[in-house]
Amino acid sequence: MEITEVRVKLVSNKDDRLKAFCSVTLDDEFVVRDIKIIEGSNGLFVAMPSRKMSDHCDKCGGKNHLRAKYCNNCGTKLPDNRMRKDIKGRLKLHADIAHPINADCRKKIQEKVAAAFNEEVEKSKQPDYKPVDMDTDDEDIPEIIS
Image 1 (cartoon, rainbow, N blue to C red):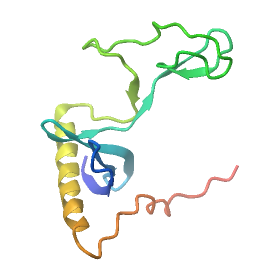
Image 2: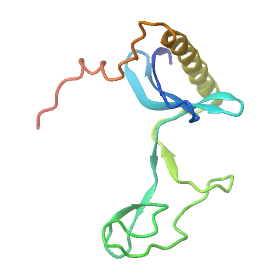
Image 3: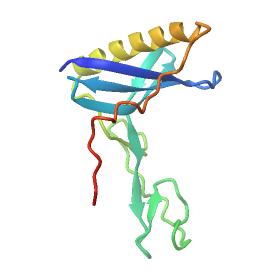
Image 4: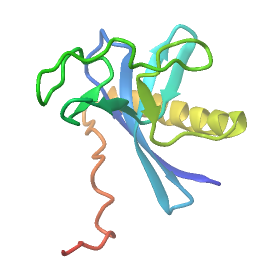
């Protein structure tokens, strides 16, 4: 697998740990979007795209985030013990949409993304800087007509 492109969109909120969003293109054929670049206690790290975990109301079947106390659909009080824990004992509230399978792959992605982030930060200091447009690579995708 070769990382053929990394696009970085800097986030302007300077107080937050979230520094940027990026997309990574693999082998000029596959894109993973909504990767977060976060400032951690040991420097930058990459957080892969994820979704909030949910379940369904026993009464009406409505879908609810695991932290919801009441059903979004019918208003019924939801049980408190709906959240599962991961192997470290932490509550599992999000599930990865895409993620590296092993440490070598994670390291490769982390290094490329960090380098692209640092390059974008340097570019942003220029007076004629224009932020990256994250939505310009869809012209090759055919329109689906139903």
